[in-house]
Length: 465
Image 1 (spheres, helix red, strand yellow):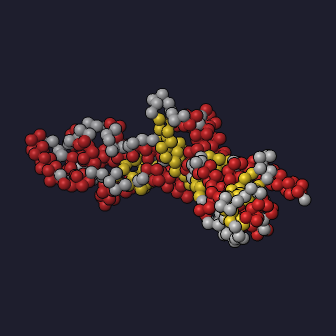
Image 2: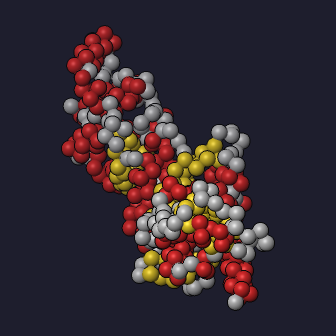
Image 3: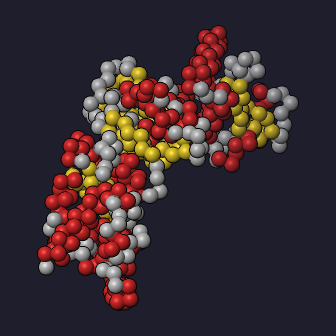
């Protein structure tokens, strides 16, 4: 019988050793959990208070720790007693012939000699505490990896939720974090970013949420595939994404000899193609960052090449004028391109073709509307309107030149832009070509063409009158 019990204990410690290896737990910590659980169950059985911990001990035998022994330090008394911390002299002398009343004796018991109820209680406490320990360790490990790229193997679908084997634990990928259109079979390997790690009371393990739909996932792919991004030479300022449709990545660099867009694309597009394949052939645009909103929007609207971009910083509006044949490129599939540009720039984007823009400029009401929409200095100009008129009149009387405000259709916004560019009157304006006008800040090629057309019509009207 003793041999059978020893064999059971030996098997117990072998199981503990194997458990520690499988769960990556420290053996001493596990043995500490077993010790505390046995003590708690024993105290509950015999009715001891928690303050008596120093009188109760759990020891593991020195011979490869193949024995578990519980001991209680008891006071020797004359008569029989029910106090768990006392022992009668008669019983004490059976254990130690030298025992005397008033002394203390340590009484040893083995768990298998105790009741089955105590063993069951201790077992439940051990399992619960080990599960809690494993849960906490896994939480700490994966919590430190939030925002990092990982890989796993697809296991199964739970309604719309993907279950992914990460090795030590399973992760989940909610529908909103999945890349639409991707199909997986059991055992398929996939990359994802650890977006969130949580402890939930009713879950036996940490809840690890993965994502393949976030902009951070794309950013991590760039760090993995492009050395300049990983080393910090090229900085990713922002990422806007509509999964499975299009992604725009804003890049910049402080190195004057480095082309951030070219570094991301790679020779013959080899670098960017590796990322495109990982995203299921999703379109990726690399956008060069600029602090000037109009320049940045012009870069971001790629693959379309705008003719002009007008922005109103105060109202947060932007007008992008594109060639007639580029309208669909500028808008994108289901409006994806313009949505991403708006998201990156923070401006509400209005896209018009050159034909639409010219047609609207032909109407005085439309010109006034466009003027209100894109004149960032409108209020300042309204405040100084009286001063402007007075100075214009004085200038006309003094110099004999024709003020720009007398050209029909030339709005105050355009007048302000021309004056800021050094053109104060009609006579000076006549000396400028369309190319020279288009170089003035705020006046593009299309607007320059409209200014010269209005000027020609005005001059013809004066001659006829």
